[in-house]
Structures are given as C-alpha cells and as structure tokens.
Picture 1 (tube, rainbow, N blue to C red):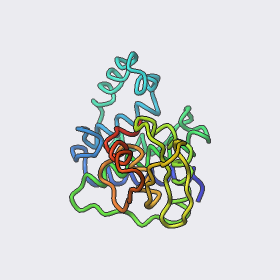
Picture 2: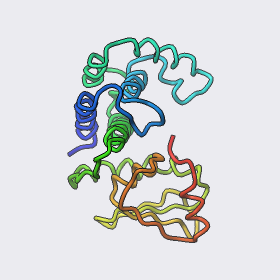
Picture 3: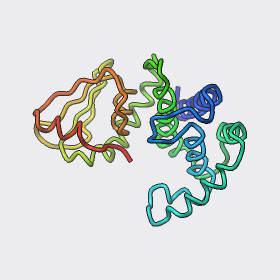
Length: 210
C-alpha cells in the first residue's frame, strides 16, 4: 500500500467513524467534539484561512472560517471531507506525508476518545507508510524536548535518529504508536523508553507535536 492510499483510506475511516459516533462525541484533540474536528480539517483543506492554523497572527481568519463552516449540518460536512478537492492538500508530496499523518492521527483522536478503544492491528504496508512519516516529520516534532532521540520499530528493528547527540533517549514500539507519541498524544500503548533517566523524563514531559 502506498502512503497516498493510506491517507485516502484513513480519510474514509475517519468519516465513517465520525458518522457512527456522532457530532457531539469527544475527541483527544483538546476540548473539540467530533464536529469541531471535522470543521478544523475542512478549514485546513478547503479555505484560504488554512495558514492561520500555524500562524497566530492569522488566527482571525481561522475563527471566521470555523464559525461559517460550523453553521452547516454535520453530515454535509463529513461528506465534504470525504471527497477531497484539487487544492494544495491534494499535491502528492502533501498527501504522502502531511495527509497521512493528519488523517491517521485525527482518526485515532476519535477512536481513542471512546471508552472501549483498542489499538488497531495495522498491516505491514500500513505501518511502513507510517514509518516514512515518522522518519521525515519526526525530526521537527521532537524539537521541543531538546534531547537526542532515537526511535525503533519493535516489529522490524528499523530505527531512525530524530535528534542527534550522544546518549539519546530510545523509544521502542509499534510505528503507529511512535507516530501518535510524536504528535503529542498521551493515550498510546506498547512503548518502551530507555536512555539517561533525566533525559527520558525531559522527553516524556515535553509538549511534542505541531
């Protein structure tokens, strides 16, 4: 499976689950409901306000776009999200890296906010697609910790240095859980930490992600 097809598959899975749990269901994205999360993703993909998600000075654009979309029916919003348009978000490199991460992480934000969640058994190809994201975008995601970091996929033994330096923090686990950890999600499973104790504490206390 290519990273692009995983991004598309996660888009559809997220939309299916959003309709299943309903607009008001909780997520792991702060205080956002499922509808709030869907609106956020549409603002990111479909509006000129998307730079404001990362640039605080443009936050007013995001607020206005969010309010406008938030007045629409939830089911219509989900179906809009399901059908990607030819925007910057459809560019192959964006789809391979950013959309794969965006849809996988936010799908899990909905899944893991539900009381009976369990970690998914992803295919080797899906885990390989997520590993490409870990090994590329992970370097920026660990920067807030300020310590050397090495991550290792427990299933294959492949590893990548995300921040260089001697005596790194070593994090071992399934690639999917490593990715969620790098995006600052606390509700992860199957991870093991090694390395200097103080550095491990700093790493685990850091606000990782975007």
